[in-house]
Length: 190
Image (cartoon, rainbow, N blue to C red; front, side):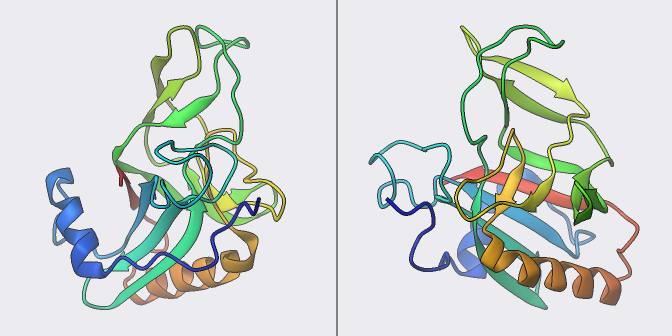
């Protein structure tokens, strides 16, 4: 089984913007990233299940009226790790849907990425039962790998598409004067 779809996501900007209305993006949000969890819900992995460990989600760059691009991504951790509490024995993190004003340009393991240093996020951790946790966890947007999604809660993009994603983000942030600021990330469920 392939872990990446045969094509990039095909949602239009108008379709995506309609789904984002409830989240509270404003005209001041000139550039943002959107993750759509379960975009390929019934065409990859187990039908009707949002699988972990495959690129069955979609990630979009949106600069309304200026730029719109789509990437194969992953918005889930690669595996499961049950735990409890917030210390060393905590469960694997899975970012909760919502609008997160937390990401800025930085480095993830030595290469440029969007990293969670601008604000807190809320995750649901694997446990019995699963539980929520809010804080600074390094839920970054970074490059995955060819054989796995490479996520312990981060949002990852297939490596064949990573260079284009970062080139577009850098170009748009520079053109819009947003290079040093927070880039909103909206996560929705298909």
